[in-house]
Amino acid sequence: MQDPDLKLEEIHRQAKENPIIGLSIMARENGQIPIASYGKNIKKLSFNDPQSQELIEELLKNYNENTLVLCGYNRTRIKINNFIRNHFGFEGNEPRLGDRVICLRNNHVKSIFNGMLGTVLEIKEKNEEFYLAQIKMDGEEEIYQGLIYKAQFGASEPINFTKERYRLKTHDIFDFGYALTVHKAQGSQAKDEWQRWLYNSLISLRSINCFARPPTLELP
Image (cartoon, rainbow, N blue to C red):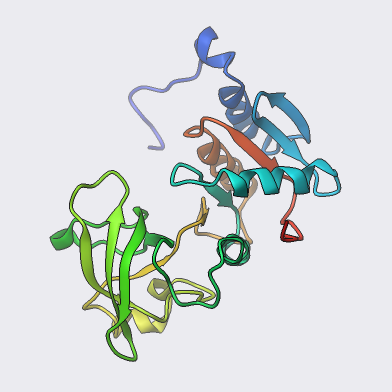
């Protein structure tokens, strides 16, 4: 893609007037988004703003399978996943009925792919290493059923990026899916890489509530 045949450089007026498209352009060109309100349900808040906690409570109250929480770092993802699960009464790192989960490895035989989200319909312990789970994947009629690794839930990093990946090849990998990272690389992005990451995180959204830094996450 360094030398494409066609390159889109001009945004049509109707699209440019869309505040989310406007934010994506700002992210691509400047690499940052100032704290401000950019339209209905589209804002960036500082966590020092008293409205932040109120907004978090509102998001939790209205949380559903169409709610997507995006963050920049894996440690933030884990923290937010724990926070949301605690709000819904889930404790510990054991997935429960109704938990939102994300697939972390492709399995073409079972038609599940990295990044797909779903909801746990049934789960029970198979042995020390696996759960036997039934998961309703978003947008799919067929229910996933199979063995999934226990160790991934609540882990500090994906098993696919550890030495364990060579040993754990036979079954599927899921993790809690309430909050997701928008980029798997962490900590050392060059400026152009950061701008591309921020741009990509914006262009597919319909509404945005963005916070300037990771929250204290006080339970309502």
